[in-house]
Amino acid sequence: MFQPKELIEEYQKLNPGEARLSGIREAIRQADLANDSSYMLYFRCAYANECSEDENGSFLFHLYLIFPELLALYEENPGIRLPGSSHEAAAEAVMYIFSEMVCCADFFYQIPIGDMEKYLEKYKEFCLMHGYPLYNYYIASARLYWQAGSKEQVMQYVKDFKALCRADHYRDSYTLDFIGEVACWYDDLETLEKTTKLLEKHFPQSQRLAYEYGRLLYYYAVRRRDPVHAAPYYRLLRQICKKYRMHTPYFSDTIVYLVQTDLNSAWSFFQKEAPHEVLGTTPLYKMEFSIGAEIMMRSLLKQGKETVRLSLPGNQPWQREDAHYQTKELAEYFGREAREISDKFDMRNGDPSCRKEYEMFLWAVEDCI
Image 1 (cartoon, rainbow, N blue to C red):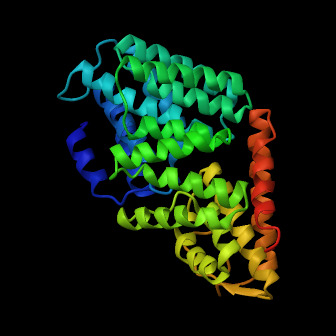
Image 2: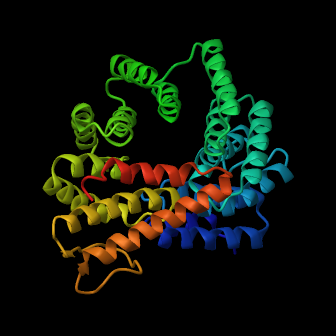
């Protein structure tokens, strides 16, 4: 007999990650056997949410595997309701997951540009049908075409985004953060500084400030190879991460700055953050970690440190039981991984920007490696 409440209780007792996802998959299987469309949707939503909330992004790609089933189920059952709720609540649940999906699709080189475009148009239709604003549609579309190297299309979506914000008299930390993100893409320091000041003034407690400080750290340390002007943003980023007990979203950028200024601090930072970073399996995150790790190892090697001791979680192909490594071997491994992932993104995007970005990070520390 199908007992959905018992299934929910069982998987909620399991540890987040693979154990809980396995429990939810069993719940999905039983709901499918019972042909209970309400719980078929409910459990798929639970699975998608669990994937998107994983801290390391290790299961985020599973969201793209379950979403077609979830959306088809919703579309094939007009008036479907989540258990004990309304059709509107079901639409809201699907909308939330749909938004997560389109906003993170650019993290994966495995998702072709054409597929992303189709989902974005489907997402736009869904928003218009159910009366949701198109903020995330414009943001995700701009990110897609930025990766594809089409500035004209990017700026059109940014223009539409700003027009919508004005029409709705809407401005929050996320909308300002996006404007800062675009400014960083196109080397617009004036706008980036302006959005940072607006965030500091109107949303002084927002965690989004971490991204503005991180972008300014990147701008000066990486793009300008200017650690003096990068220094205040490094301190501000460090303060806000400490305040909210969050891992830095700018791992490789921080490595660049610290390698430029204090190698011992760079190594301490690496040892502290690497156990978190190394667990990520999302390609974009893996690429960023690998860039920082290569720079770190090459910097140590230049200073004559031929071996390092690293105790890290997980089961990586380069890990050894004794936790002792040849620094040169690690530098070569991470460099190769960074280049391979960059090239896969460039192949997917039809634009060489990822490989150029990788080379710019190395250029920023060329005197140190």
